[in-house]
Amino acid sequence: MIKQDLASYTDFAEVINSWLRETDTVEAKLDMLDFAAEIIRNEWVAFSHAKALHNESDNLKLNCLPIQCFDKSGNAIEYRSRKRMAEISFSETPTAVSVWSAQRFVRAISDVRANGFIYSERFHIDYFPEIDAAYVTQGNHHCAAAVYLATGKAYASIISFRDLYPHLTTDGKKWYNAHTNEMLSAVTDWRFAVLYSVKRIQWQLENGDSNVQLNYAYAPSNDEYLSDRTLTLEQLVRCVKNHRVINSLSLRAFAKTADISWYQDFMFEHCCFAPQITEKIKNAVGLAGWRIKF
Image 1 (cartoon, rainbow, N blue to C red):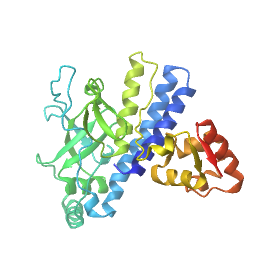
Image 2 (cartoon, rainbow, N blue to C red):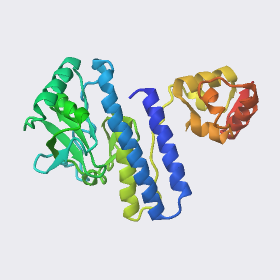
Image 3 (cartoon, rainbow, N blue to C red):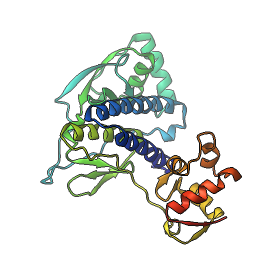
Image 4 (cartoon, one colour):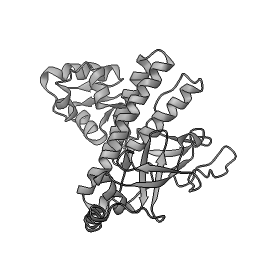
């Protein structure tokens, strides 16, 4: 996961956590989380489609979830099985794809357009009922062509998040065994990690846990930025450019803390500190436990 992806997950997590704090009832929180899940699901699917236009080397198929998850006793959980199948329609079910060969994709589009989509048992698709979305893991180009042309139906393995909620957590950077906190694998797409986390929080709320929030990772490469010594403005700018965060807050969250208005925070996010917001930054940094020398 690149730094910008981690920053994106962090930004989204902070927005969700602020919404959770500002809503009073469980019903309101669940409604808000449904709304958030739909937004991020649509982005996850759309981004997978847009990647067909990117460098092919960036589009290698990666697992959304860890290959293995474990229960409290250390036994592997068989959460992926072709024994539980669902029929999906590519014209109705949001489906993420992974196109890694432009030539094969073009040929597949021509074939599906001419002959229709013909399902094969060699194809493998995962369907996640909690988010009503699917992900193609085998038969990528033929299925991707059907998705783009919004035609055809296929059978997908049902993977229920509910089977994993008690055993699997994420901070947007890695997947963890919920019982031992052992790292299982790296997160390959922050959007899917957000989706899982949002639905897991809903499950916690439904089971009576009101003290919930999205967790996120922050791993600075240099501890000097978390010290309480005096920093120059240049050091602060370097910190922002390197980590996209200030004292564990995303830039947008820090801008809000600093009372920097929406029309100023683009400049702020790109390290162009205008004179009129310098004082606000100084005050906010002071609140965060730093001293800054301008």
